[in-house]
Every structure is written in structure tokens, then in C-alpha cells.
Length: 197
Image 1 (tube, one colour):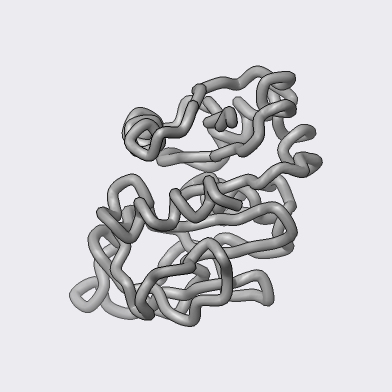
Image 2: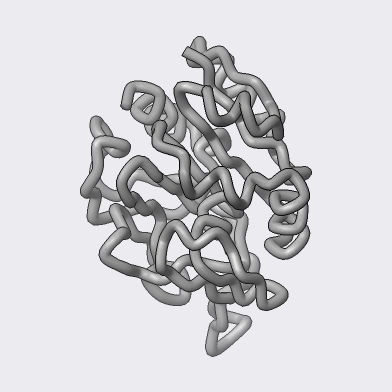
């Protein structure tokens, strides 16, 4: 089984590759259209800025490929946000796999909630094989200033300032706002569940 990890000049890719290696997956970092098309599974990682990332995807024509993929696909952090239709981060049109908007946290008081949201927080309301074997309200690690709104595609939620989509699913597309590769045994289990799909 080959896992294609999409290269698009986003951060934290190396830690994703290490996490997959620990799970025994044959993972390759690539922006090659053909290789991604033929991979058994695809992971879309990310830390970075939406408009820059979308520009790179368009240069490589990956903006046309990604929505058409049929194999299990896992978008992480910025990778989750870019699968939505629009991000408030630099007013960026995204890939449109999920008809969901990405918004910036707007806390009423900076003393109560700091942005970006950094640290451990719990996920609730599980509804997916991706979360099999996890206890309700397991903790995962976040680093983000923007969030995906709740929708019919939300398979787990987190509360920070408001309830937002912690994980989403539509057909073969699965996503997670937190970083599984930084979320200890919980994140490892989510990655393992994805590799087993």
C-alpha cells in the first residue's frame, strides 16, 4: 500500500511522515499528479496560509485532481480548511469538496480566548469509523486561527470560542483540524484507523 502525502510547501510534513513510518506505512511526499492519482491512500497535511497554498496547488493542477480522487483521502489542519469552499484567510476560494465556510475565531474578549487556538482540547459527538476505539472526549492537539463551521459533514466537534468541526467526512474525504501526528496515542489511533479504511 502506498500513501501519497501531498507536497504543497506547507509546514509540519516531516512529523506526518515520521508518524506514518512508525505505523509501518509506505509514505511518499509528492506533488506529482500521476503518483497521487495512483496512490492507495492520500494525506493532505498542512500548516500555513490558505491563499499561498491554493496558489501552489493551482500551479501543479492539483486543485483539479484533488476533488476527483476516489481513494480514502485525509485532510489535516490547513488540509481540512482547503477542502472547504471558502476561507476568510485572505478571502481565499478553496477546493469546494465540502460546502462549508472557514472563518476566523472572533472571541468577545482576548482575555478569555487567545487566537491562535494552541494546545489540547477534547473532541465530542463521534460518528465515524475514523474514530473507532476512542473514548468520548479524547484530547487532541490544535494550532489554528481559523475553523470550519459545523455542518451535516461534521463527525466530531470541539468547543473553543464556539463549537466548530473538529473532524469532517464526505464520501471518501475525511478531515481533521487538529494534528494527529502531535496528538499522542489518540492521533496515532486516528491515523491507524484511516490506514485501515
